[in-house]
Amino acid sequence: MANKPSSVRKHIPQILPAGGTASLEAARKPGALRRFLKILGPGLITGASDDDPSGIGTYAVAGASFGFATLWMTLLTLPMMSSVQYMCAKIGMVSGRGLAGVLKAHYSKKILYPAVLSLVIANAINAGADIGAIAAGVNLVLPIPVWTLIVPIGIVIVALQIWCSYHFIAKTFKWLSLALLAYVLSAFFSKPDWTAVLRGTFVPTLLWNREFLALAVAILGTTISPYMFFWQSNQEVEEQIAIGRKTLAQRQGATDGELKYAALDVNIGMLVSNIVMYFIILSTGATLFKAGKTHIQSATDAAEALRPLSGRGAEVLLAIGLIGAGFLAVPILTGSSAYAVAETFGWKHGLDRRPRQAKAFYGLIAASTLLGMLINFTGVNPMSALFWTAVINGFLAPPLLVLILMISNNAGIMGGRVNSKPLNALGWFTAAVMTVAALGLILTLRN
Image (cartoon, rainbow, N blue to C red; front, side, top):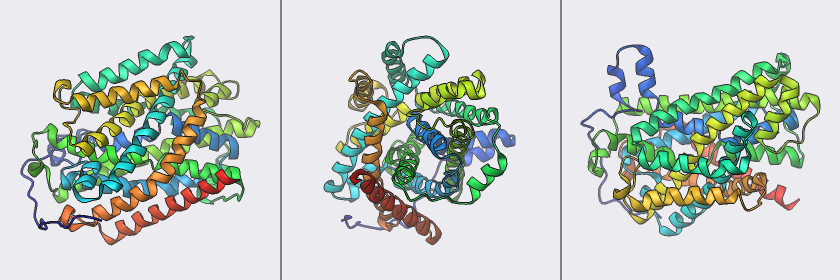
């Protein structure tokens, strides 16, 4: 149950324009392109991170197994993702806290602790599989043994988070998101049947069998992931801290203009994510499915299988996308876990703090990355690990979505920035779909 607020904040002023996303500062930048790039921030980064190697692998399996039959799901998930991530952004901007901080301040620890523990476990497994995928992507381009790359990759990722400023990290993440365009380009090497593509896009296909249902659940699970909820809210807080809003009171509240820019940033980020998802399914459907190579287990399998069908160019593009997506996703996975745990226990945290100022926070990042690295040396099948990650996320996402809706409709937390009726309708629809997906996952496990 939520704690009863002592007072309802009807007006929370914002004195300084925030830097980065959701920023009125963006309107002052000369030139349309510079204003546009200034607006993009946490929303774009979160959307791009959603296309991590595990997601890429899921989409590649979808295309290889069922051709263009799941393309329509990109249209279904876009408004769902956008509504949830906007609510998370709004929670961070208005409350001045990340999602775990809000849960700690207003809800029972019986809700907070299981959610954070599940998030940490799922993220560590996912990060480990993604580190392995980065190494495999490098191996596709350079003949370096995969196992020798695991430790150097992990060290580089941790060093980036510990010793670089938040501004540098945010800019790096923005540029890394461009690597995902490789998947859009690779689709044109496949020479698809565009009539069949359009049919798969706009005519929903539902196959009532275990394989299709399990894949649909996997697509939803990897597209609407709990780590994105925590990361989005915390990055909105980081953006405010970066321009001097150090205290909670200074961060609380958001102007109409800031929320407008936040919505634009989130919508663009989710659109980029779904465009990449669309073209991965398209390219693998046009090549692997058509050639009968339906039994692939990972994104690297897909890249290797594409070589004889679409040429070395498509394989290299997929490898580049895989490496860039992994380097983008792993810090976000480990970072979202660290934010959640640090806020839960009231530890100092933030990527703009020096390591000595937030030792526990950075220690959590390093420990999560180390655990992910070790997974690659245990002999655990990476696809099996990702499957169980999807299981955890599948059960974690629905209750978290309900909590997000409760928080974003709580006037004691959000003041006058509670959800509109259309946003609530879309949010509850998303929660319902994810609940059905979780139930469907149970059915696939029992059969």
